[in-house]
Image (tube, rainbow, N blue to C red; front, side):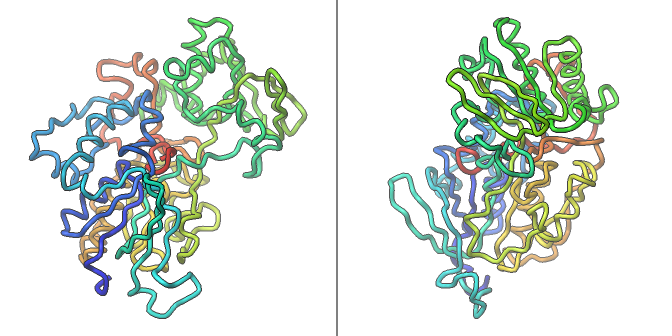
Length: 460
């Protein structure tokens, strides 16, 4: 990086992890240049602002960001309170993005469409490590411009690319044609999006906590709109993963969430269909017919996909990546986060060394660094960028010294592509005492819904 050290460092995405990266770069005397596809910081979270997190505020704030905010008179939220997505934006991300030293480096309405080495495609080796990066960006003014930078931190998340409804990793036959009958993930079914679901047959697809949140909200809607019919399709033989550990769950809110869904199913308010791997969708004039691999068919007016997310790696096609072939995470990180073997509490904290790629000074961080694994923690993302920025600043000792301890908080099974910080709807939180859904066993390190933060309006 020495040859180009006077150039800025590109940060892709102005969500919590992207803005944390900017804060750490500023502390290290490096120049951040932050590109956000949306019109504001945290644009992805804006799409699920109605969702409440399981984790209290004290685990959702980055240390370097706090050091920027505190001298301004910013009042920190109550540490034990559980924020909604909207509060995460309004009380943290928006004030952070508005700081002059951050705002002057933040470009919104700026969609990164490609990253490469200046003058070199991925086949060229000579002088590669000492050559600056080119970041090609479509800007809000309609122009496409190339930006020359010393390093790239990709914190763009996974929200823009949901997993398909079909099996085998492919869209179901007819899925694209049925797009008008498929909602966005985590819709606000009792608020902003109410009209799309009230009094209709709604099919929720997925076996993670996003599905649980959605089912509970639909049940609340059905109390006021009795004609609302709730169908739930899961690929597995049971819904046990969603039901979780109940009162024995390491995260009380998560246990309460599963218990509520179980009660809804047992009471007949949610119609559960197990072993329902979707093979096709047929769009009809008034509804969509969803067919399973075994020939069963469900008819619905609207389908809510709670199938998780996956990374979009297209912008990095001209760079040299070293990815786990299954998880699509950095090669050394992949086996540590493989959801076949690991949960939130069993993934070790890690930094720049495990996130490095053959293209020097390129790092994928945040939810996107976990590829298709669903167990990402927001605190992990903050530690990632602290270590990465230390490495970019030449402080290898700090980069290699992990400063975060993540104890096991119990089984963490979430949607593929959904972070371990699975959100809890207000209705679920209302069942627990005082501060909301999490009586916060010490300690709990949780982020936000993946993909969920990490941008669907673009970046996270």
